[in-house]
Length: 82
Image (cartoon, rainbow, N blue to C red; front, side, top):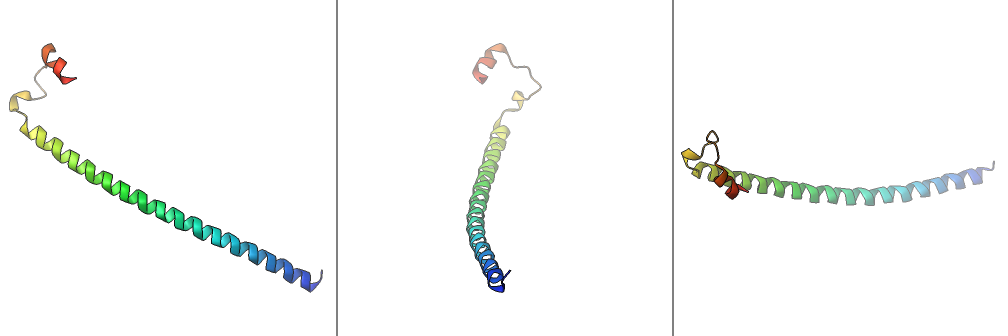
């Protein structure tokens, strides 16, 4: 092999590596953006879940003591539950 052809082959491989590196950088940037978006969505959902839990706990506290889980529900009352 001639030294020039070896240098040319190395130069081509370096060019291909640079192109691949740039592609990977773009892909990484896109993925980082998606991770950030998903983290924001997760945080928003956690916040909504916490608020819903608080509302449910407040509603449960407002239930009269006679509506405990130990008392059977009559068939007439069951029609209103669904």
